[in-house]
Amino acid sequence: MINHSNENTLLDDANSYDVNKQLMGTISSDFVKVADQLKDASYQIRKRGFSEYPVFVASRRDVPVGQLLIAVDDLGNIWNYKASFVDEFIQRELIGPESVDLWKENYKKPDEYCCLFVIHGDFTGFVYIPYPED
Image: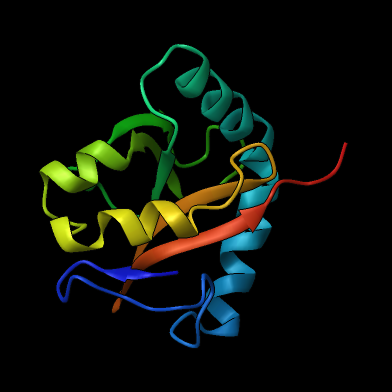
């Protein structure tokens, strides 16, 4: 499911038609480089009780959401990755109050999938990518 922050509407599919194949390819190839660190950060966010819904902001420019976890080129990556969680998205009204329950209902298992909030050009939305199998 994807939340377009400027519309506060949820779409049914996690990786909907709005995410073009070229963008998904770019995200996926970069994600492989940082997946282990993001999976560990997701575990730590949940283990320490910050949130059951970790979200990682992926962008090529600096954005005012989340705390920087992996900067461009830290691991040969071309995206910045910031750690956050659903509460920040609610506080910043990136997820509207009427959409919170549906968002949580569609949130994928954080041990298996990484919830990325991707900001790139005209696209801003949630994308779920499975962590590589060990």
